[in-house]
Amino acid sequence: MRKHKNKIIAGVMIAILFTLIFWYGGDAPELRGCTSGSENSENEVKISETLSIDEKSVETDHFSKTDKKTSQAEEGNEEYSKKNGMEINEDAGKDTYPTNPAPEEKPIPIEPENAAITDKELTCTLSVSCNTILQNIGWLDKEKVDFVPKDGIIFAERTIVFYEGESVFNVLVREMKRNKIHLEFEYIPMYNSAYIEGIGNLYEFDCGERSGWMYKVNDWFPNYGSSRYQLKDGDKIEWVYTCDLGKDVGGYYSARNGN
Image (cartoon, rainbow, N blue to C red):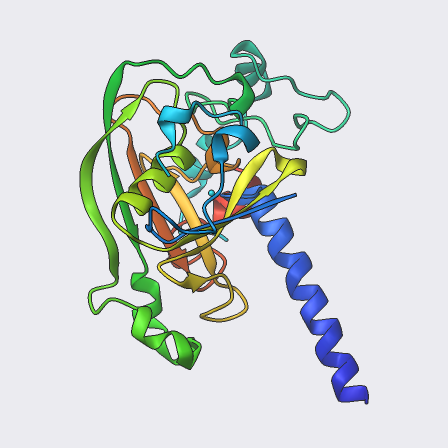
């Protein structure tokens, strides 16, 4: 009885820990969505209705080894964020959803409902990898071994076209469907964003209690969800699987400090 109780407590603590990590670090997000790439899948979600995203945009979302100077550069800049339109609560020091101020010269979050998606075509690069699982294969759920590519690459980096005003999430959903790659996400109102639960049938916690998906753009791990990150021409998007709360992919600093 006591052993069973301890397992329950441990499970609750793990859930709380991951909520905090993704709140402050990477892809923190009523709606659940799953796409398998099939045009007739019953699990497809009308994202344009739930996230106020233009229909065209969805044809279907730790401490790194940094020195002191880098860490200081990554701290959120409240003055910079306010100047660029981010509404910061003076008492909480965060915005409505709740996100820390963005570091200077980094994009501030744009709410999906405020995104103005146009017909202008731009390009970015996208990749999805789970190399860290290969390095920690002993932690992986045995039932998931066959889903891990031998080279750890689920979606090789390539240049893709997107529409001005679209988000990282828009691009991920569309490209995974086009390439028939499984994707599952949950929309969480508290963060006004999508939270990516699984890609390629690999989910959070599949490779240890500290595992899950994170994203970065131009080598920066944003401190807000992927559907709030509005892309710019030439951006480099990388979705990476972490087995250690981001520490193994350079995102733990982001997760802990909200950067």
